[in-house]
Length: 64
Ligand code: SF4
Ligand code: SF4
Image: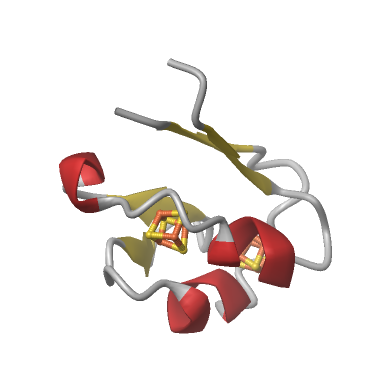
């Protein structure tokens, strides 16, 4: 299973990763306006989120 690593200091809540995710597991925390994930077991490890993010705020660690 991959690890989704989110750098909340860098994330500006733009939502590009949400739109890019084919598994629809990313969502915006309405309180903090930062990205969160659910159902990580559905992650396809496609890295579309990582590629779309302009702020290097989300990484997919596929090694684990
Ligand atoms: S694309 Fe990057 S900056 Fe934008 S919401 Fe996603 S993680 Fe945050
Ligand atoms: S790697 Fe792909 S499936 Fe996993 S969270 Fe990112 S965009 Fe979604």
